[in-house]
Length: 164
Image (cartoon, rainbow, N blue to C red; front, side, top):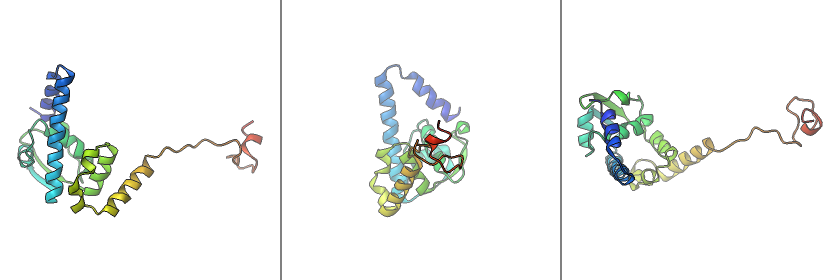
């Protein structure tokens, strides 16, 4: 059975909000511990079967499904996470800068503020990545103001030209 299917079944079995909350809290704890191990050991290449990697990260096999899905965009070569089974051999090469950026995108403050980042990326590099992330996610308006030059190139103000 595919590990993604196992994870989805676990979610369906959660009948109440309390059960769902418990499941997700357990996932977040295992995810945090896994990232602590990866960052602390500077182990940016995870090779082996899905079961071996999950075991090395002290993670339940079903919980590895959302973990793999979350880290997938930070890998040099993305995985087909929907096809992963316990015996699937994988080679996960993690790009730390991309991982940090993607943690910012996911708003996973509990992950991008881990103290283990200190040994991986300098404070300056993390600040630079954060600045780039903010720049990329800043709202930009392409609306022409009434007193701006008209985009048609006439040299007139928009309100006296095409804005009439």
